[in-house]
Amino acid sequence: MAPSLVEATTTTGSTTAELRTYKLQAGQYKELDGHSIDYDVETGRKGGRGAKYPHYLPTWDREQHYPPLEPFEHYEHGRDADPAFPNLLPKGTEVTDLTPFIGSEVKGIQLSSLSDEAKDELALFVAQRKVVAFRRQDFADLPISDVLRYGAYFGRHHIHPTSGAPEGFPEIHLVHRGETDTGAQEYFKTRTSSVAWHSDVSYEQQPPGTTFLYILDKPTTGGDTLFVDSVQAYKRLSPLFQERLHGLRATHSGIEQVNAAAAAASIKRREPVVNDHPLIRTHPATGEKAIFVNDQFTRSIVGLKQEESDALLKFLYDHLAYGADFQVRVKWEEGTVVVWDNRVTQHSAIVDWENGQRRHLARMTPQAERPYETAFERS
Ligand SMILES: [Fe+2]
Image (cartoon, rainbow, N blue to C red; front, side, top):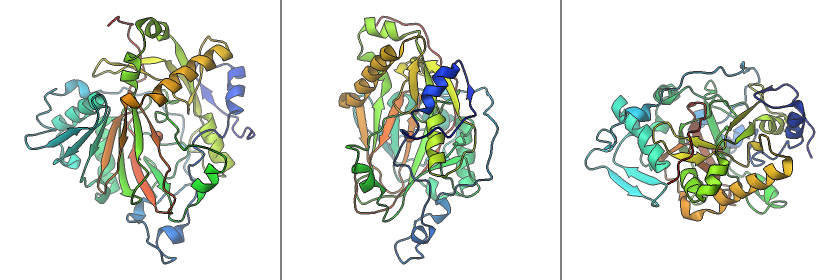
């Protein structure tokens, strides 16, 4: 058990005793995440194949310290969208649904050149399909500042408390596994699976909504991303059980993530927070209800005793994780931008390639509204 490394916290509705419990759980967050890279290898100075986009290599700037996030008014552009998507998906666009409930693939449009009307439709389309893979995109080749300007339409950019970022652009969250990195082999000496379902930074008071992830370098095969439809997961529950979940709130903690970074002598851009959110949240554009607890960040259900909370949360985590009939597996191709709605999905990276090939992605994470719930409705 890792020692507690973080003392200062800001919290919403959590007791000191509860916070002590969170601190004991340090280290369970994404043990596979890297906190450093070999720049000689990654830039090709050691003779290997350097990163295709070296200006996107992760840096961890110890001088970056930010105050607590302030609440802001989120504008949900999906509400303004034409539900026929005439601007986003004009005639000739190739749209393939990957499964009935979740996941589509789109070819023939360029995200970076969308009008504001088309961006509104993008927000709604992604909310409906949960995750969409847009192929042959130019995001990675644009100046980073242009990509950020584009993404800001969807909400305030989240700056991650600990992750690596391109130099000078803390708003970009990088996912990076370097060439010849053997961390996965070490990990599998003590673990059976790399699957770790979560929705991103759900501990924030206003977690992300429409979220963008684009590929920079990829292994020949492997490193797909799993997504689960948490709206369909909710619909699969009996009305009696759904009704019982309504009105419950759960705490989400960012403390362990910061502790894990501290244990690796990495950075802390902001003091971690704990917030509670409704177990069942409603999407502002679609009105759909979704299960909103995840194994990485949710800690307990407010008002339940620990064993009660653990049992109920385990049921919900298992329900989401085993629900292959409402999940999709997205395969990356060069030029792919994956856009998902973080409010109504969870995802997991898959670490299943052992040939030391580089995997490098950039995420843009606009924050959305504070999660809210609407009354139970018998369907
Ligand atoms: Fe994630």
